[in-house]
Length: 411
Ligand SMILES: Cc1ncc(COP(=O)(O)O)c(C=O)c1O
Image (tube, rainbow, N blue to C red; front, side):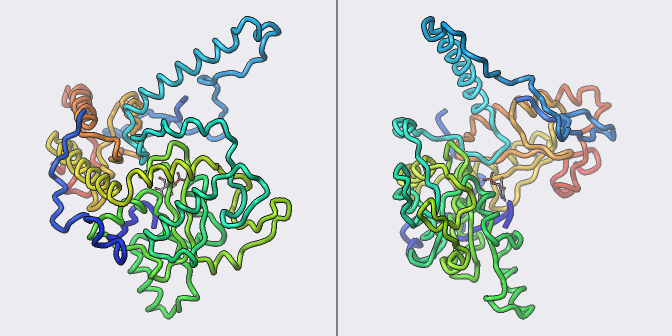
């Protein structure tokens, strides 16, 4: 289930223990909060091709590169090299702070504090191989990894002794795992029903659920369709750096143990059976995930989901009120709207764009205040883009539907 995956409320053991998003949940109620070189592509604007960031495959751009240079012989004595590197890093850190403030377009939750884990950067933690089989390499974090996997297996209703999985380097690795990629689906129940009606028995199809972002949002929304291993699915994956808010790319992959037993092979030098895709795996990631899951728990994620859905409604409504074409799918926190006409603006807010549309993915770090800043700036800029009346906002009805378009024809 790519992108629009919708997970249903937790049932069974979890249901009843936490307050799931209620039927009468009012997404329009606002929750107040305290306060590289770019590739270009083209969009059309009033029928004209508008020069944007150009995508050139194979081009090797070096304009923003921090060169690695050989140390001078006396650098160790003078400390110049250390001072130089410290200044580059300080500038980089400052730019990261700025970029984090203005980030809106990608589904990454940038709201976290992992200060307590800083001490672990001194260790080379590597979880190479199968997390359930001891390896000869001792500096690993498998005890955290398995704890995290258990949490997700419980979320998707698979018994501890019936699953296999690992913390991947990203959601995509989970999607690629093994022979599992047989397609992505949005409406799981409909897919299963269609397969069954076509005469397929459960042993003759394999469904992998790609829950990159929504895999951790939809379990907390009552009306969303449910992904559960009680249904005939083979595997589920999510990204760890998206809704969870892990500071490094990572993912979680859970599959039925029976599938992995068929795939496993011996890798002698690790002294372990290895069904993972990569050789080495980030051993810090499971600890960061474990830390967040412990701090937030199911309840914490549920609250964050509610906040995101409400704030997404707020953004959509304010865009529409400002006469800007915008759409928000039900149970989604991705607001699609008319592409801003100024690439500088797009870059500043790190919006993801395609053709004449852009989107903001409302994540837990995106507050009402941040959305207000964005909206105020957009409305102000827009008045200059369209000031002389010659230029009109583009028609985006083919992307968002006539009812959501605010072009001259549809407003
Ligand atoms: C539906 C879906 N699948 C997979 C991915 C890729 O995830 P990752 O960046 O963790 O590889 C994304 C990224 O946004 C996505 O939306």
